View 1 (cartoon, helix red, strand yellow):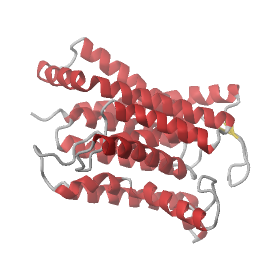
View 2 (cartoon, helix red, strand yellow):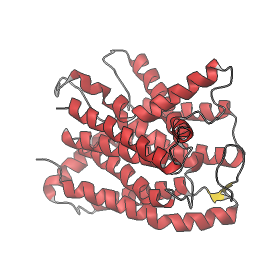
View 3 (cartoon, one colour):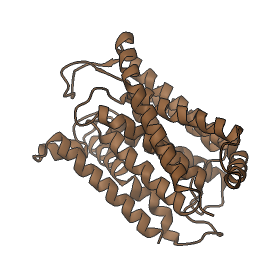
Length: 328
């Protein structure tokens, strides 16, 4: 019996409403606390913008999580689904706790970077510690290599890469959040297709929270994600790429399906690769920002900023559609 689509929709819309409803509060809070992104080098805004996005997105997700756990505790779901939920939560409780702990850690790490502009070394160390915690809980890549050490290191590298890839894409209104919505949506669809209901619910939770935030960030930004938000988005997309089983002996399917995460996240990963290569070749530290991202290049070629973001969304959508085709 397939898990009800109505529950996925409920998770999505609840997270969307929770995130959107919390944005005005977090904007006011950020203004009072002086948590603002000031105009400056490489920035297009002329007035300080509140960095409330990450807090709003996390609020939308956390609120639904709490409500969901209460519903399970009160046996609010039909009996046939309570058994499956109880089994899934019991089996992966430790992993889910580590994943949520890592999300909170990434939010706080990004918040510290927004506040005090951490050095690249300290930020990278913090990311590595959080990624190690997730890998240590058993949420790992395998890539057909029967080595625990390889799996552990590959998982840490993957989380670091995807987190920073999304952090790099947060350079124009709506780009990071929009790519996050698409990525989470595709991971949710693939997980639902294979009956992996916990992973699908988590993916639609992320998708909904980002969808609630997006209207406040695109096309005109009343608030930014900030490093807190972009770290959170990148982290969740990295984890959502690890949690599903795209290929197993019990569900062999198409071996090429393991490429699905690379296709779904192709835009941020290729953008990261491009700017790292460009900066390294020019003899500059790859962690120092510039205006050579895909979005900047599209604007220089004649696109408006909104149109450049839109076409990168289209590319992200097509990558996800290709990944779905691989599952056929």
